[in-house]
Amino acid sequence: MVDTPTYDATRNRVEAYFDRTATKTWERLTSDAPVSGIRRTVRAGRDRMRATMLAALPDDLTGRRVLDAGCGTGAMTEELAKRGADVVAIDISPQLIDIAAKRLPEELSHRVTFRSGDMLSPDLGDFDHVMAMDSMIYYTAPDLGRALAGLAKRCPHIVFTVAPRTPFLMAFFGLGKLFPRSDRSPVMIPHSEKAIRRELLKNNCLTPGCNLATVSSGFYISQCLEIRA
Image (tube, rainbow, N blue to C red; front, side, top):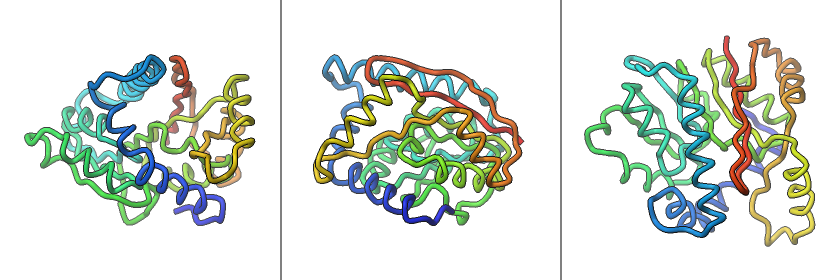
């Protein structure tokens, strides 16, 4: 588990945002309910990213233990369970976990264990695969490197997303710093693939990684990477 002032502070901000401020927004965004044009592009981008990440896994996950790290309202969890995986679905927001549990089809419930808390907790055990969709995008490069290196000790295959260092996202990141702290939602921190590799090496994580894809859909821009033992 990462235990640094920056990680702890960011985790607390993310928890407060998703569990107290944005629960209804995310519940609607991740449903079939009508949303604004901008949010439709975000929804479409997230759907494409989820499909990209799932394509990195075998179609048959029977007998495999998979961590859905930052499961949100459970869309990835459901797809993993449909493939036969034994899924541990964890999110920092208890309210989002409640939504995910209610949405999961009853016939898949025996394959899923829902937890609220820190997705990096070693108490969760070892896994065959870790899926972390847009759950690590708020952390600094050093904290991200430590988080991934820690997970790599317990799992040979990690598929995760970061906010890429595009001109748009860098401008958006800078703009977010102009708002008063009380008005800020957690801001994505853009990273380059090179910087992530550098942080992994600092933490003695020598597993090779590669860029799978970048998805850009309106205001949704995310890069999918993987680490394999």
